[in-house]
Length: 373
RNA sequence: GUGCCUAUGGUGUAACGGUUAGCACAUCAGUUUGUGGUACUGAUAGCGAGGGUUCGACUCCCUCUAGGCACC
Image 1 (cartoon, protein in one colour):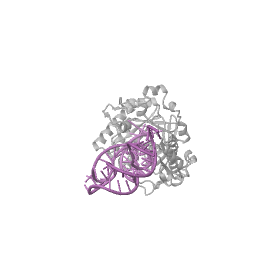
Image 2 (cartoon, protein in one colour; image 1 turned 90 degrees about the vertical axis):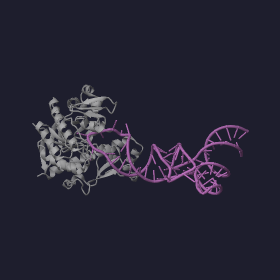
Image 3 (cartoon, chains in turn brown, blue; image 1 turned 135 degrees about the horizontal axis):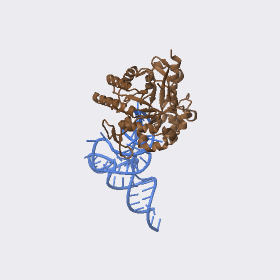
Image 4 (cartoon, helix red, strand yellow; image 1 turned 120 degrees about the vertical axis):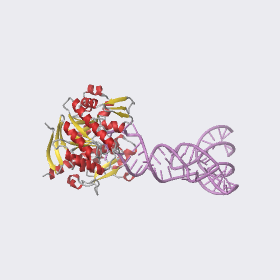
């Protein structure tokens, strides 16, 4: 039985639901990132107010702190952070690749040095599953091997094949009632990607992710791969584009049939004073205009609120925005808060950028509902 | 009042009688795609004023100005 239910389609863009232990998710959706058990600068209550449907957290970080046994003793992440909605956890594969320079990958797993105290940790598909079970995530990701964006074909092939074998081990070792997603690898090579997807489908997963993109390759290549793979993946399972992306990328991927997204951009950019603002009413945008990797014009602006030009600007980031930040704070105030490094700057900016991304997803869902035949 | 010391971007400082006066912070602008809020890239901006010595002075000398210290 599938937890995914397809409701409507506009061409290949899909609106549906995913049923989890902690509620029903409306797709397509965006997952704010709570790496270490918190969306940076915000509380679980804030995330509820923002109407975030689901949070993403990280096996890698939580394995380092508080650790496996401690997480078990704490009764899982829902309890720890008092979040009643669904949680998806990343397996740690990507973090080993992106955060830890000193690591050694073998067929067994990855030995890496903790970025906190330098101690050596051996992370395997089995340990990743064990940790994700301890966390109590509703959706868990397979442990995968990620190749850098500029790798030779042989390295992409190796990472893809190893990820496939690890996918099998993850499925075998997972004993709880969690949903497990496989991850398609293979870089920018269509044949490797397709081999990966078919291999995963043979094993059988509750959903399929496209990994290893947005790591330095051209946007045209990402679009080509995602379009192709969405035609290969089964229609009765959710599809998850990992790690991306800019708003216009998400709009394009939804129209290729992707259901799930996560990205650090709204939250990290917020902390650096770069805020997203619609330049038109998102409820009335015809999203079919945004299917190209390089659209001639965008539906939003990026407001760098630390810029000098906003020193005395009394208007909010986006006058049409209904978020707490825009209802209460001027650009001048935000600029001031960044200037004096008040923590409130991070909080207000993060609220706004997440509201932007979540509003974008809501608009896409409504657009599919409106235009579906 | 007398003597001594100091004066280099917004701030704190470095060097040298000889290419384009170095660094840090601040400021300004940019980068950030399954998150090390701590990172990275670029830009703006300076020899207190006047005179002298010298082929050449931010550097040596004199005067002035400002600040610091000591003494009366």
